[in-house]
Image (cartoon, rainbow, N blue to C red; front, side, top):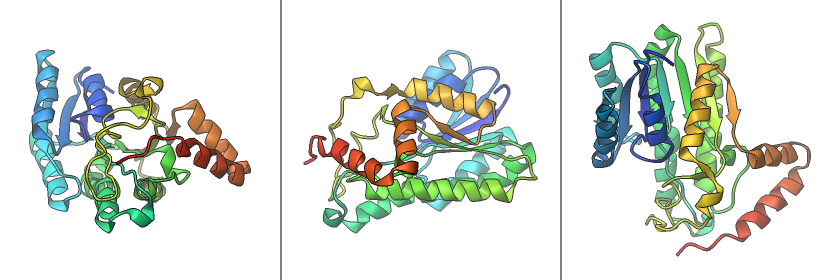
Length: 266
């Protein structure tokens, strides 16, 4: 991971911000994208204080034109793309039958379509550089989680999409990594959408017991460097996937019982 041009979406907080700080060295040139340009510019300032190279581009990945502009500006500035990290995402927390359909659309548009749009315009340059295409998925992309129907659906969709891209380019030296963090201490739960589309505001879980965003970022970077196909990060994640493979009914009951203990959102 030296002298690379790296795009990170959702770089204003959480895992994206941690990735930015961890990658802003070794001659790398960062392009940081997010909707909140104020927070994004704060990250840029911190990076530039260390005399490292990064630019910010205000981007709503749910809008195809924004994603096209993100790639075009990256090429205009640096002339190539070596790594695209599709990290931007939003969660939700509500029973499906109580949820407004616009909530489902918002989550899918950001998580799934945002990955599709950015990949569409970056792929020709990644093929040229024999670079890395990364999707930050979730354990929720392997097993459907209660009150997170749209989130799980979007992550399942990302997995299938990126696996197809990988298989289409087996002879083109394109590296495709799908990363599966477990519960991570980040802003995603506080900004999760409730049934009417308002933000949850308060995390229902004990964030102190979770992996930190920095830990997740370090593991993702290592997996990119080693050109791994898949990265499951937490012990609990590996365990539940093992159980789900061989004892699916037990896995579903364990998941149900676990999430039933969560503090209810408003």
